[in-house]
Image 1 (cartoon, rainbow, N blue to C red):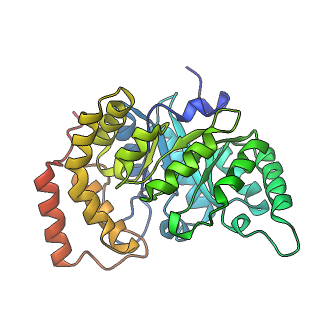
Image 2 (image 1 turned 180 degrees about the horizontal axis):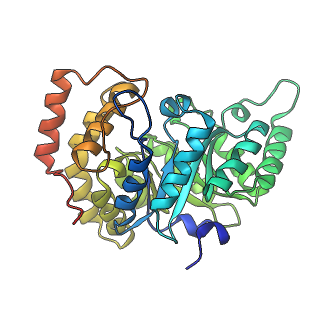
Length: 322
């Protein structure tokens, strides 16, 4: 079986399963535990339904990493994946500045990039939005790796943005799919989904919301790109398969079971939420250490108590890897 980088990565390549959005393991001193990255990838790769892993997706964490550290994380993750599994890498905003970064990601072993459409949502005063979209479509076509565009949350979106992302998709053959955003606004998701499915070529629509995951998969999501899958990989993979196979009640039951954990994660600021993700992944044997670079303050006792109660109540026990 050939390495995915040697194949043509298309919309169908990133459909049909889940991508786990991982966090980087750090020591208590803030140094990266590189060997643990490969071990983490190997464990996730063994789970049925996992198409691959997405790295460097957390903006806060990515800003603490040097360029070489980010590329080494890609190399170490690639070493733990199976030959047919894909490695996605977030490079930040889609702009002329990412070209060298994308080439380095490719050399390190990434199969596709995830990028954000930050500036082109507003365009530039000296360049009409249509021209800016055309320029970005040309840029995406010139990049050496396929592109997945990550959409923003509904409350920060302009009404016309669905039309604009559809225009970008029509003109960029290298754009293979959209991370539909960690967005619980199901009306915004539905609008984006149907707009993108109207494009006359295959595009993968990959939901990444936790709270609205059940709805989004029932709408017809092509896969999952999920931080929730980092701490509940078997559960999210089973939820996805149930939704795809018409097992609506089974999928709903899994989502209801995970609801207290989703509520706990969504009820805090991003820094606290990241620490809860780390604590949960560590508890389940998916992350060697709960420590994070740049987040020295531990979870407060009340949140820690609530976390352990939630984990126990929904039965998320440590995973046996034997």
